[in-house]
Amino acid sequence: MTKYIITGGRPLNGEISISGAKNAALAIIPAALLVSGRCRIENIPQIKDVTIQLQILQHMGADVRMVDSHTMDIDCTGISSPIADFDEMRQIRASYYHIGTLLGRFGEAVVAMPGGCDFGGVRPIDQHVKGFHAMGADVEVRNGVVYAKAATGRMHGAYVNLDVVSVGATMNIMLAAVLAEGITVIENAAREPHIVDLANFLNSMGADVRGAGTNVIKIRGVKKLTGGTYAIIPDQIEAGTYMTAVAAAGGSVLVKNVIPRHLNCISSKLEEMGVDIINMEDSVLVRRRGALHRANVKTMPYPGFPTDMQPQIATVLCLAQGTSIITEGVWDSRYKYVSELLRMGANVQVNGRIAVIEGVKRLTGAAIKSWDLRAGAAMVIAGLCAEGVTEVEGVNYIERGYENLVEKLRSVGADIESVYVPDPEGVEEEEAV
Ligand code: EPZ
Image 1 (cartoon, rainbow, N blue to C red):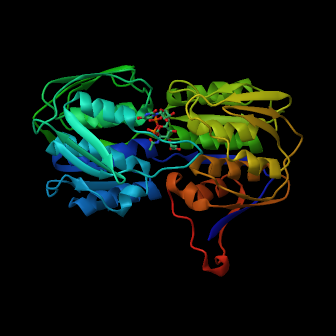
Image 2: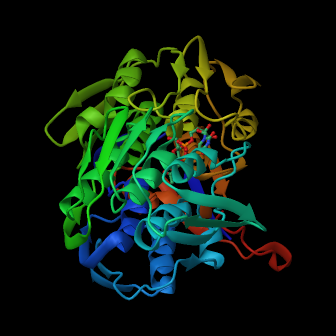
Image 3: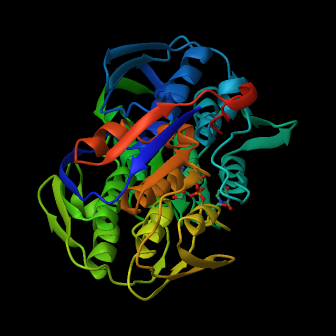
């Protein structure tokens, strides 16, 4: 297995460039299935989940060609079957976007239920099903496979009022609606930057999606999407992760290739904690010299504080003077990682969706594990600011969502290395789920 070995206590100084947004790429790549002809997609992050998403399209019959390390040409003309029931589909949650794309293109979908990070709660798809049903599809789940079919052979427009603000349901319904007959309105839609990015991709291919980024999205079905070229936006959560790393370790880092307004929810919280944030056109300067102040955090759908930044900000608050309270407002529970912070000397008490953090003077290095993608990133941040050496296991989770994390951190002075350790008794490395 591969571990990260981190010697903490060194401030971070220099520049880090942010890659394309994982959660935009994981929806835009499947969306190519709706396009007649070749799509060129640029600024694709080189991460495992994206590789799996591309493999899924290839398995279905798409022609996928690498133009350069971050640009792919995808032509899905050759896909003729609505069936996507194979192993890769179970390895990532975002494979479920093919329910929407296949329904949109063929009026039918047979898709293996997705996998996805297990942070301790269920990850339902009832809101996705609600939308597909409203648009004329019969949907049932049997033996871990979703069977969906439009009664008339083609999806039709519908008014869908989501019971829960759901990123996945918003994007999946959008995918099913762009080639449907008529107009679809999604009320209580998610407003994340990656929702807007998917809408912009679809519109650049000839779709008619309006209102993305607000809580009401209107999609007018068109007959056909033609090919084109599209560049994915920078990753809000990757940028936020490095911003919190500087907050924890101290120093001054220019985080480049970002859209600063996407980071406002993170920047304002860090400023409240005593971190200096200077916004520029496509970068933010993050500097922490003095003591960290306590703060309360409530994770919410965008433009609130992102749930995918919760483990990272919690780790920083472990070193802030005073008592901080975190309320997880999106997932039932997302605190499995706290057990690892306690091993490092943190003082955190969890009760359901609430974590109460008493700041401590220091964390001490330990052997810790990554429970999921963002928790793993938080463990790296803990190691960067701890005294002594920290060994982080489960880095396969981290590498699902962060391109070149070790290299990026080393470039700003972190003492971190990736070390391969033969598995004891040949225990297989945990599958990325
Ligand atoms: C996306 O997951 C992201 N994953 C998650 O990021 C992120 O945590 C989440 O959005 C919230 O921002 C990808 O984009 C691949 P949701 P998704 O549907 O779409 C409930 C990461 O680290 N819900 O917005 O699965 C659900 O239980 C990952 O990059 C229903 O009840 O999240 C949750 O409480 C981890 N019914 C809330 O809505 C549904 O049908 C938000 O879920 C769907 C969701």
